[in-house]
Length: 542
Image (cartoon, rainbow, N blue to C red; front, side):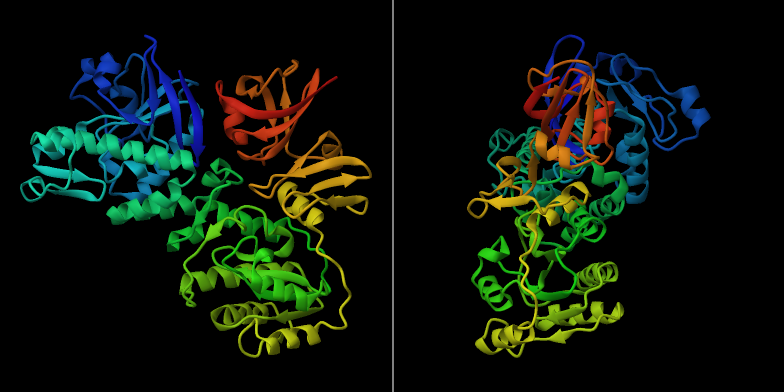
């Protein structure tokens, strides 16, 4: 039996329980021959990872308690299985095959299966393996490095004769001069480090550092990011932790791309008469920063405010509190490299191709001004520059204020903007009111509360009355029972395919309705036989 507990894209922590009742907290390294004794019967016999379907069918060994798969396998596991991927170590240096085969095998099998990568894990690559969805590892790879007299670290493998005597490690193996024990300790320690980062919501940041150990690991990360349709459904909709955009790969993070895609495809702006482009700020949400207080004082709600930033490209004022807009940190140097410029130029251009404004004012400088200028000219959008020197100088702010002085005042519609981005729907918000202090508001219809706001993520949490306003989408249909707590995956009949982990969902059954937050994405919710599917907030009996 396998049950995932904490997820981060393909990676997860979980519990694997054998038929004998032994329980293991994954990911972990262990003596797999002891846990799966049937592996001993077929020792030194295996099949290539890449081989013909007929060869695989004729020669693939059968194991008790474990399912062997390779690239041509037509078999598929069932919930709870442990899946061993034959000779996975042979593909670690071939990123394209690595990602293609991984996608093929993962798509064929239920989400609640444990995955074992034999003879593959080293301290320097186990972060990539865990991020690829592997849960169980053995010691074969590090033991081989021991036999070859290599000293294993999270940064790579080095000649033991040079490194072992330097006192760089004080583990039990190093203290007694046992290289094999050190290498095994290094693997176990790195797995625990990865698990800690995963639980804290920062696995991606760790991975962007660790993948630098080899060109192939960098390529694997980039190819997985390019497989957006495969990865994005497995990525949580929001985190309450910071997103540290410290490398070029951060631009390609699935949650970054998803934010931009939703701004362009879903978001409905409050107005399309006048827009003003302004820079981001180090402080989040932007409107709490001194620079944005000055901008807003000059603009006075007479234009739609659009913030230009890296790595998100464009952030309409209505969405400044939604993850990751209010949760990212990026190195500020004043210089935007070619990849950043292309990504942000494309985002701005696509937005203004869809949303045609009557007037656009650009209150930017430096590279951000050049990027916005290129994007607006590409779309044939007329614009006017309002900055003279420093963007927050008295002269610049006065020029901005003068340019907008005849504009109609209209406050940004936070409710409409957030609902359109979050649920992909447009509702009539004329009867809805935002009440309360900043970051502690509630949305009311008359005296009835229809939405609350999650201060950690900026997302709306609908009440039952709120779900009445959202006509479709984000529904989870359950069997005929009254939830007594959280809803488990076996109780789910079907769900909307747009649901991602962390989404607010409306649970519908014959005997009850419920509101809550998805604990897993739609694909996992429908394919798993174990685990919490929805964290329930309220239940209404029918």
